[in-house]
Image (cartoon, rainbow, N blue to C red; front, side, top):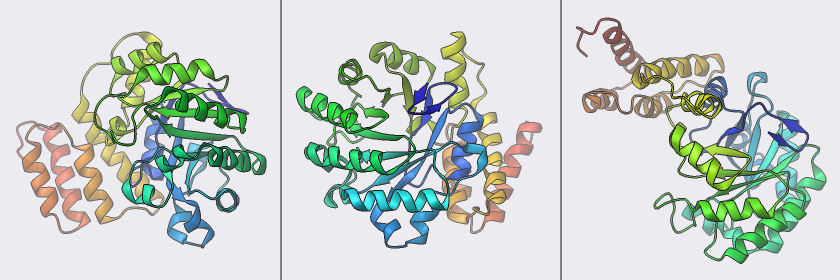
Length: 324
């Protein structure tokens, strides 16, 4: 798959997710087959104001390059300034413009999905970014209820210089409920000459194949299904290539993955108690007797306690007769 001047092996992309796609998580997904990964959504205004925490969200390493940074904002000049600042601190492979976040605070700020009602402003934003940056620019949208509006926005994004378009097939009001409208994504794909990436309702190998076949898109963006489960990229890429399912063994892999995640956090000095606690919930999802394990994690007071719980799980796997 090509996006602008960049060429990727494969066509599976990790979605930008606030509080989730930090560097260690991105590296894990890349390790298991993600062709491209995006940072968490970064506020352009916060970066321009000099907010260190926001700028640090663009922290990267050579292991994941080229990687993408997703920007949030509504002012073209501020967005360009923020992109240049981030690119100067940590060279970025491509920038994505968030036009699809349905969160209330983002909407109240006039950003995310709110911009879909301002197609001319969208054009100015994409044009400003494309003209000012020497790396590809992509945009991520949700759909509207009107077919003509969807196609008009998609055409504006392409004409304004975007190198690819990512389409989440739900409306703002749907949030993450209901079904992703694959027909709309397919119609947008037919309309454009730039790559179109489908997003929404891709939860496993079979849904991935269905979405690709139905929409005829150039690639897939995977979000919630990858939370705590970076191995999903390996499973889907294998199935798309070989048309065969890899054997089960989900929990063993998830336990290995959380331990890998911890090592990556240590490597980049990003290991914190709150993050480890939250990620442990996600990585241990679907384990037998998970309620008792989660109760122990919830009662943990420090990282050593959580590490002890994970160690017991690992020992239990080696010695099934052991109990947690």
